[in-house]
Image 1 (cartoon, rainbow, N blue to C red):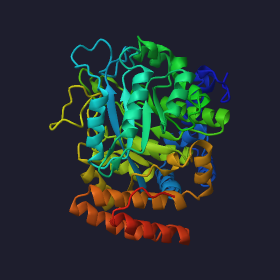
Image 2: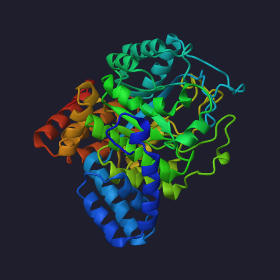
Image 3: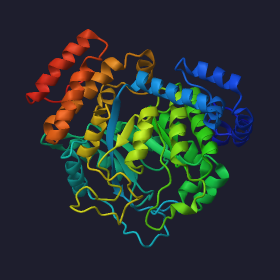
Image 4: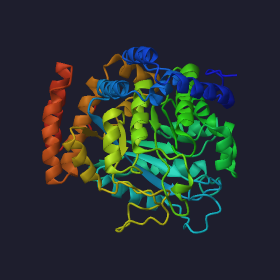
Length: 471
């Protein structure tokens, strides 16, 4: 029985409810009065249900689809403005005991070199990341209780936060590790993590178990209920995601929204972020063997409808995607992207790109400075801001600020100030010129006059050598 408040995976991600939703949406996808009603509701910028969202996704009426994309852009602009948060993944270890059929880290893969970074190697990787301007990292490891225990992750977090190199510092460490216990989530919270991220991969239980034939990850309920345990452990910023292409995107799209509804119903706050990766080739993995791959057109619409359905949630896209694909989804919903990424263990300290230990192929291989300049030329504000996390504005406190519209008086100036830091410390002359032009224009869009004046003053101080201002 479907129950969004239940703590049991098969009740809040209910297969019968998803299948009824799929059938209902298929029957009503071009029901113009219903579509207009859903869009009118969505126009209040408070989201729509998983059923309503799927009807929008399935719609094939050209004029209605234009309205869907227009509304997605409007919502993105209202809550996130032109800001795009920047981050980089940091792969600590690719040792893994799972048998995931879509990931080269799987236990039976004998062709991939196994590697685990020492704390000294982590320090070198972090300095390399600081030297190109990154302030926010997402830690990644394979699941291996002996090689990658929770103590190793905690030690790594402490190492990262302790490194101060020139003007560089990692100010927020997000963590993407395997499902674990409430006790371990408490330890991660105490270590000062930002967001706990865990991809569901697919919400289809039957397919999930087939795709994860061996290892701890085979346990669907343990994995699906991980966000509940994380919140019980005090982590109020959690990030969900599926790997589109493992099963039909309609099923996983509904499951993803049901998971967000469950967290809202049970804990009073939905996911801080939702990630939308697509299956990619890597080492011994052939993406062509997965027949449910999502086209670029469907991917763009999927992101747009996610933005309408969960207007307050950050949407993340990685360097799996090409420059062209990323550009399309930035406009309709994405608010966070990675840049200058390496998906191999130790990849940032290699003079030449080393993909032997990579988890997946990187499509957008541009260096960070080039990505920043590209965003600036598109009119976006690349943001290295971590202020809300450091000021304790997480979970429901962050969401209430976002829903009230007051976030612009925090995020806009913080984005501009961290961008100015990047321009002073790391940018090429061309990127710096483009950035200062954007900053001058965007300063005028800060709603509060007093905040605007303070931000302008602090930007001048940053040019004179001061750092780390925040609202």
